Amino acid sequence: MKKNIYPITIFVLAIIIFVFFSLLSFEEKEVPGKVIVPEEVTITFEEEEEEKVILSLVAPNVCKIGELVTLDASASSAASFEWKIKPESLNFVVIENGKRAFFSSSENGDYIFFVAAAKENAVSCIIHSLRVEGQPISDKFTTLIRSWLPKNSNPLLLEALSRSFEESAKAKDIETLIKMTAVANRAVLGVNLDQYKSFLISFSEYLQKNYQGKSLEEHVALWLKIAAALKPC
Image (tube, rainbow, N blue to C red; front, side):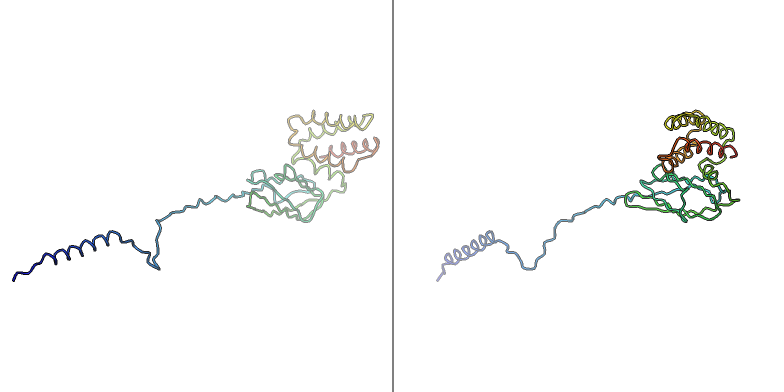
């Protein structure tokens, strides 16, 4: 007797169709502990160039008593400067926002100069030593006046500057005295004005510090003393 396989065939096809649609509708479930690796990301940091301070100091190591010494840091690359001197001296003046300094001494000895320069967060410093040599000058006022003058001053120019103070001392009042002196000194110095800037600045500071409220006679006496101190230089 021949068997009927049609029902079996239908049953197998039904199973195949069921499995096929089950696979199509299957959603992959998240597997615990599975690490998802993101795409590679490259981060670049641009390193800022550090600001550098270039501190340069031009100054002698030895000078004579009464000689005006210039300490020049103007070639430095810095925003600010700070100066110190040991031992301390009243004849030490810093100008041009710390770029230059003037110094003179009436006595022998060794001096140490500290100069620090800063720019942004960078700092640099220099320690400079200076030895003062020579015979002490007994007249302290003459020494002071000489300390205001530039090194190797022209004797003819100093003689003319001395006469300028003598002539200005003939003024009838203090205001005229000072104005006449300023005009006469500028005329005498002419193109050498910058070279003698330290003298003019120091003279002005000396007046403001020591001659406020002084009489005309006291001013005239000072003018004549300056004139005399300039002649033998």
